[in-house]
Each structure stands twice: as structure tokens, then as C-alpha cells.
Image (cartoon, rainbow, N blue to C red; front, top):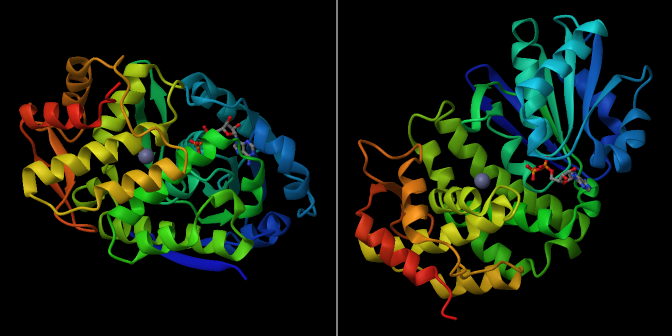
Length: 360
Ligand code: ADP
Ligand code: ZN
């Protein structure tokens, strides 16, 4: 039981361990990667903590100081960063302290950035508690939001280890499962590892997966992400492929008002639109209906409601980081598992929006 990947980066490598019950061995696992740690600080999402903090703490001989974060994107703020840094310093953090994040993407992003800037960098360990965090905890992106936009302040800062105990996913609300599962499907569509077939054959409801199958799902999905970030640690090229479905996805999230649609629900529609575009632009032969069915089976909305103004979505997409000299660029699939970053005419994007808009 249990799986492990080692992610190679410019600083060496770090392990991603996936194993049921790993939370009960947190201290031992941290000591393995940070043998001369002077102290451990745990930054914990309040919801995740309410279920799992005692389990994690029970693994320590000397309980770490715990800093709690309120759930939600609002915690990725400069004020919260300041509060966390102050608390770390007041409780004696030094250069050999370890900051560990217990929670989802919000906790990992903020705690990772705090670790990156505290004393010019202390060791950082991720303990993800959401499905979506299988994506965000790997690849070394950390950061916070700015009133001008999401994730505008941050750093590439690799963790010393990712300790993933899938048993902690049991308590995730349904919507959060779905949000994370969209990234799983994304990874399956941009890779040629046979992962899409594996998903279709093995996963009716990810919540019902037996321990080993859930470990395998996480392992396969993280493997896709890992191979891309290993090739392009600092997002100069192929890392953009991970943005598949995100051009429209981000626009839907922002246009609906953050928190209305989960990230994954918006990305699911974005992936369908990107598949239509791939057909228009590259004459790609894609199993669009199968993917739509897969998404529907997992409870995703696969039609864009009429309430969305296409012009406004287009304007938002033009502000996407992939836009160059005012030209929209999308990650398209030349075929299944073969992503490419391609400039796309506005007219075609409008057509794709029509394709994904609900008939009624
Ligand atoms: P992500 O960006 O990974 O989706 P967030 O950090 O925004 O994650 O967390 C999503 C929501 O799920 C938050 O409300 C958080 O408190 C909650 N949460 C995180 N982990 C768990 C868990 N294991 N069980 C229940 N709720 C959780
Ligand atoms: Zn995403």
C-alpha cells in the first residue's frame, strides 16, 4: 500500500507520498526530509483541522505550534500573510524551522509563500486535504491574491515533501470533490498515459473508490502534472498545457463572481469549449461526447447558462496570461493527449461559446 513519486526540480527533488493513514506519521515523514529541523509550525485550515488536527498532532513527540486559517479565498491576503509571519516570528521560528500546511489550495498557497519569504526561505511541507490540492501542491507555485486579481503576488517555491493521506478526503463536501475531479479529468485529457481509459473503466464515483484505487487515481493524476512541471519548472513553455480548459474556466469563475462556481465546475465547461475549438481549428478528432458524458456522470454542468454574456466572457479571456499582443491563445488538443498552445480568432471562440451554451 502507498505510492511515491519523486519530483525533480532545479533544487534536486522532493517526494510526493500518497498513503492512507500517512497523517499519523507526519513527524517521522517531516524528519526524513528535514533531519535537522529545529521546530515545526503547522498552518491549518479550520475545517481540515476540525477533522484531522488531532491525528496529525498525535504523530509528534513535541506538538508543533498551530496557526489556524479561516476557510476560503479571503485568507490568501497580504493581511493574513502578515498575521501568519508575525505569529511564526513571535513563536521563535528560525531558519531551520519547518512550515507545514494542513489544508487545501488556499492553505498551501499562503503557507508556501510565507515559508518562501520568512527569513528568505524556510522548509515547507504540504499536507493536502482536498482533491484539488493534488494539483496545487505539486509544482512549487505559492502566493496570495491582490485586490487587482488572483495569485498576483507569489513565488516559485518547491516543498520539501508532499504528504498526501487520501483518507482525509472522506469529509470533503461534494462540490469540492467535483472541483478537484475536473483537474483529474484535465490531466487525463492532456496525457497519453491511458489515464482517460483507466478513469472511464474504473471510476463511477470517486467517493466510492477503495483505498488502493484512490491512491492510484491520485498517483496517475499527479504523474501527469509532475512530468510537465519537471520539463518546465518556471512556466516558460509546456507548463501552459496545464491551463487546458482554464481560459474560459477563469472567465466563468470571475464573471459569475468568485465562489459562485467552483474552480473545477468552470474548468469542466472550459475543457468542453477547448475541445470544440480543437475541432474547428485543428480538425481534431476528439471523443467529445464521451468526455461530456463522463463529466455529466460526475455531476458537472455541461451547458453554459444563458445568463452569461459572451462578450463579457471574451473580454475577460483577452486578459488571460496566455494572450499575446491582444491575440487570444488557447491550449487545444491536436488529438487526445496532444496539447498545443494555439492562437485562435475571436470568431471561432464565439462559435465555441455557442456550442457550449445551453439550448433551453
Ligand atoms: P482547494 O483550493 O484545494 O479547493 P480550499 O483550500 O479552498 O481548497 O478548500 C476548499 C474547502 O474545503 C474549504 O472550505 C476548506 O475549509 C474545506 N476543506 C479542506 N479540506 C477539507 C477536508 N478534508 N474535509 C472537509 N473540508 C475540507
Ligand atoms: Zn485549475
